[in-house]
Amino acid sequence: MATAPRIPKGTRDFGPLQAARRTYIFDTIRSVFQQYGFLPIETPAMETLDTLLGKYGEEGDRLIFKVLNSGNYFDKIPEDQIRGDNFAGLAGKISDKALRYDLTVPFARFVVKHQGELAFPFKRYQIQPVWRADRPQKGRYREFYQCDVDMIGSNSLRNEIELVEIIDQVFSNLGLEGTRIQINNRKILAGLAEALDAKDQFSNLTVAIDKLDKVGPDGVLKELEARGLGQKVLHFFSERLNSEEGMSLDALETLFNTAETASEIGQKGVEELRFIFNRIAPEDLKTSRLDFNFTLARGLNYYTGAIFEVIHPDFKGSICGGGRYDDLTGIFGLPNTSGVGVSFGADRIYDLLGDKNLFPETIGSPTQLLFINFGEAEADYCSRELKKVRAAGIAAELFPDSGKMKKQMNYANNKNIAYVALVGSNEMESGKVSLKNMQTGEQQSLSTDEMINLLKNN
RNA sequence: GUGCUUGUAGUUCAGUUGGUUAGAAUGCCAGAUUGUGGUUCUGGAGGUCGCCGGUUCAAAUCCGGUCAGGCACCCCA
Image (cartoon, rainbow, N blue to C red; front, side, top):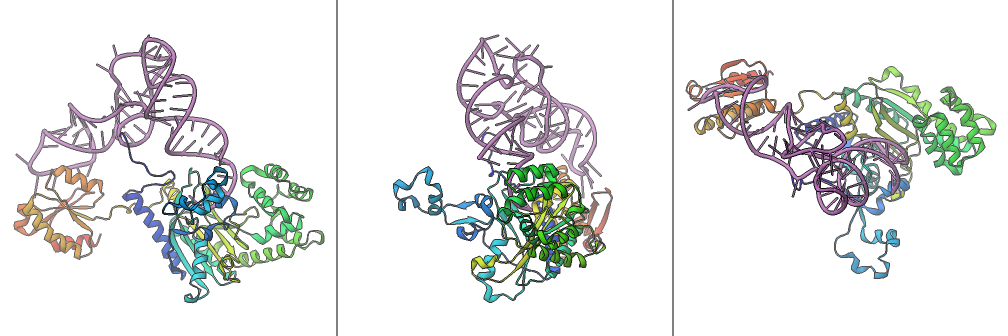
């Protein structure tokens, strides 16, 4: 292999089995979305650059794949501006569109653009690839599919409840047990910042406490200190971080109601979560568990209320995430339209189901019957029988070449085809086929109609 | 953007302190078997050891560079 062709870093090919398994995931997720009354939409792979920039935070902007303009754009740029230190200025001149980074922002843009045609509250789902110029590693790709469900134009917290049910339903339908749905509320984080006199350090605060799972309580304290958070913050967390009680919803409620740490927005956040927890009992969920987790922050900076993240003990990183955004459409000119949604990471779910061997075995062998090819006359005869079999709704094929028997049987074997029909001169004369069950090796002589009946009941 | 690590048949990997013609398993092709696969036996094809340079009588092996993959950080699905 002197010059083996390559594909770009962080992208993958999918063979027949893999593609079939991915379709299974998409179909499972899609059917749950539809069951809850969501409608499909699709948006272009590219958006204009200004639609995407500034929505995902600084880090996010850096990871957006920009698409080069067509034509010789350098002609229009004065020569003295083409310098390395002017890269930021040049980028805007040589690129005015980019590959979408997620499905939520394009959705917000879609809603604003088509507001006149939509019935609100609008419930849509969208299953499409997104691209990020990230360094790939395990569970992280440069091209991956997201499966988004969002409802926009309703402030009701019943939407959040419905999303929890959807998440539970999807993973239960996929046969995955032990998923943990973690929930927090941006208002609680904002309240915490307010109560601890760290309002202007909100993002430093959230980034630091988000690391609790990874670096432990001491690590978080170090991180807080390194990020320059004040004494009040350090003192508060050094006392509370070691006990679950200290950061429970009850404890936070008390905190936000105490005079010297009062926070109205914090109270609101607690209230919102209580609404949800009061209506979802653990036994309401099939295979998932719903937990409050105050360390959950999420980097996408458009979230304003509830935030979700779904994890699984056997997988590093989240497999689903989302939250409420009160004013994402406002940026595009449609204010006061709140939305909430979550996104399933199809590629991570694919990896996880593969690791845990949870794909149904029947996936990937669509052909039920193969006609062996003994020669032109026999093949002509089989072609006519094949039409009848297919018309009866059975997936079948005829081996195209009259090669070696062994090769044809091997083909059926490798493709996991359940039955093989042998039709030679004897069968043509009697009008029957010899049908071989590839699993048991049993063989019987049947008319075409009898064969169709047998295959249908299989 | 930062750090670590690995590149040897199609694939997964061996390859000793540097020493003849670089191996195995599996897969592929053919035969044993002209109408019977998944078992078995026999044979065959398949490699410029990622690439470039250096050290040496001698390099898959040591050194430098480069490219590509993987992992971790950051961030995230």
